[in-house]
Length: 385
Image 1 (cartoon, one colour):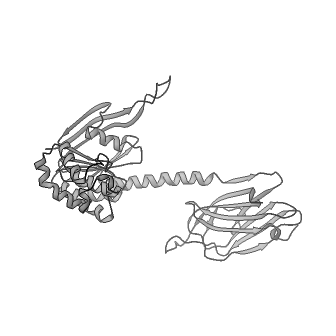
Image 2 (tube, rainbow, N blue to C red):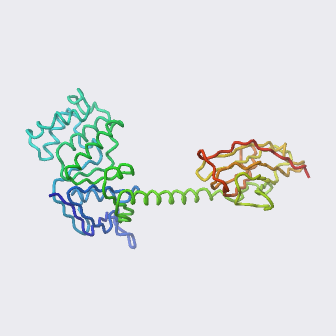
Image 3 (cartoon, one colour):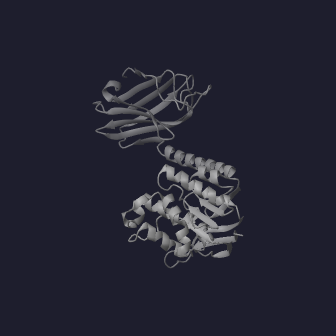
C-alpha cells in the first residue's frame, strides 16, 4: 500500500558565494514540515510564490534531499511539474511515449497495451507521428500529461499542470485525475486555483515561508488563505495610496490646499454618500493666470471616479490667488476609501499639489454593483479678492 510520511523536514539552500561574517547561513525553503498520507488521500498545497510548495514536492518525489528530518515514501511516484520538459524534440510523439514508458520502468509490451489510449486522450491525431519540435506549447503539454497519467501511478504529484490545452481538455484532464484518485491512489496537488483544490482534494495544506500555516479541509483552508491574501493586498494598496497624501510644491510661490465640507464640519474626512459635498480649493498660482487646475478623485483600488481640468484664468484673481468650490449634490460615491488630488499645472508640469484621503459610508447600502459618479457637478466661482 502506498504511503508518504515526512517527519520535521527542513530544506536549506546554501547562500550563493562564500558566506561573509554575519551573513545568513542559507535560505530556508521548507521549515519543520511533518505530514502523513495513505492510500486515497488527495492533498492540495496552496501558498504564495516562494512559499516552498515546489521544494516540498521535490523532496517527496525524491528529486531533492532534505537538509534535516526524514522522508519515507512507499510506492512509485509520478511527477507532473513543468509539462513538456523532457520531451525529445527530434523524435515523434509516438516515440516519446515509448521512451518515457521505458524511463518509468514499463516494457515495450506494457506501453503497447496503453499507447492507443494515450494517443486518443492527447487529441493529437496525425501529429502523433510528427517530430515534437513541430508541436505548439499546448500540444506538448497535452502529450506529456497523457503519457504520465496512463502509466497507473501510485503516487501522483501535480505542480500547476491542470490548465493544459484548451478548456475542454482541461476538464478532461481533471476528470482523469478524479479517476486515478477513485482507485485509491495518493494525489498531491499544488495549484493557485482554489476551485481545483476544493473540487479535487480532501485535505489542504497552506504553506508560508516554508512552514505550515494551516492543515485541514480544503474549504476552510482556502477561505482562510484567500482572506489573508485579500488583507495583505489591501494593506499594500493602502500603503501605495497614502504615499501621495499631503502637499508638495516645486516652487515656493505656488501652493494649493483642499478642504472637504459636509454639513457643519469644515474639514471632514468621513463623508456620507447621498449628502451634499463641497470641495473647497484655495491656492496661489501665477499672476498671469497661465495655468490649469486639475481635480481628481481616485478610489483605493485605483479606479478614477472623477477627473476634471479647470482653466486658471477662470478661477484666479489678478494676483494669482485661486478660489474654486466643486459642489456635488448629492455625493454619489459608493462606500469605500478615496483620495482627492488637486494640482496647479503649468506647461504640463504639476507645480504644486495637495492630496487628502477620505472615506465614504452609506446609511442605506446601494445595490446593483459598485456605483460610479453619475450626477453632473455644479461649480461655484468665488469672487476675486
